[in-house]
Image (cartoon, rainbow, N blue to C red; front, side):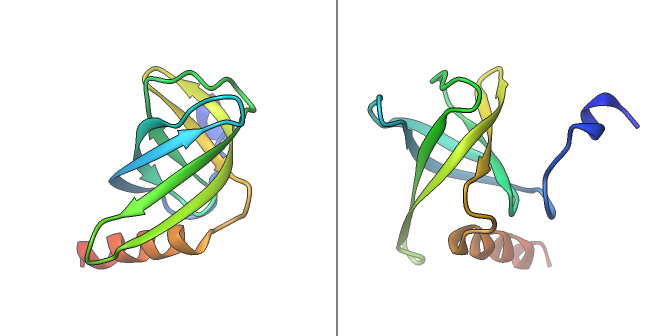
Length: 109
């Protein structure tokens, strides 16, 4: 088992997505980002902003039609990566995340 596998804390399957989001902290303006992968416990957000490890952020997901749905999810930065951050949802398996994972899984079939 590799070091990175031992550090893996994700629950459920990681699903590749490409969903535009807006992210912010209490001290910052919203910045553009993009969800690149998604799981019940967290996500990878591609962004130019450096939030800092363990920072509480708000992630706004605005889905375009036909879904036409929006959600604001709180998450903690669990990993700092080149060009993005790994986040862990404050609420495990938010409804919109479950729905997005289900929809992506159905597209694969």
